[in-house]
Image 1: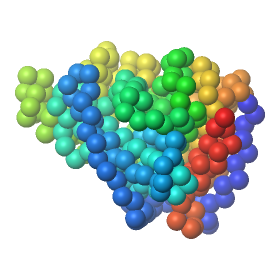
Image 2: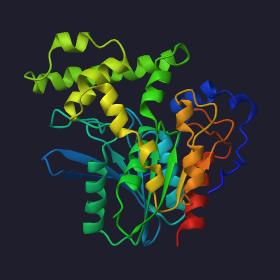
Image 3: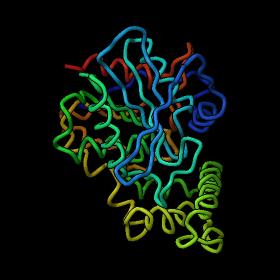
Length: 321
């Protein structure tokens, strides 16, 4: 599919990626969304919390929304999508990955960029307990990588899933990890590292046989975190093995339902490999949009809703057949 020429034009003060990323992450407010929490039990005995929001009246359509690293269902980029879709007769379920709903999960493992197993269980739960005939998946950043990997690695996805949208996706994890360790991204790197280490401190209290203070103190970078915890807790050899196996880039050629990937060219988290032009040109189901501006999970627009939210709705309405 030819590359989509983006119509997104950022307002003047939001043309710098850093400004767009920070403003959208720290200062944006989305009010009026009412969510109802459901806790589901996973096959290994752990739990996931799903936050549902509903359109007025009965609908047969649902969007599943996946957050980024250390996000949750209440982040404003999640709420913005849910609210817009609710206003357009589409229910929404915002998934909190393991340990991201305000409570530490039970098992030593948590979540990671390539964990499609939990998403499969969420989808199966929805199919078993509801009657939606049109289901869409939208993921942001880490959640976008999960969505793309799920759609590409699984050739037998349920027929109810009609389309996918992925925003600001580090689809080549090794390259994105390298970018996050550069000086320009130090504020983001350090914030992620602090939050993840704080979670490990809590997890250590329940899993003293697997984690100790010396381990946690040794973590100086996000790479260290992935090497010590993410990889080992989820069955990978080391951080590089985790990045290699979990990157969605290698699965993009196999996506067979309409899928939109929006990656801004000024997203400082993404390496050159995260703009899969060749894969999009060779796959009629993969639509790649690369706006000049937008930062990481930014895409500010005046009027309440952001560009990526309105674009996702437009894409679904055009491709839900």
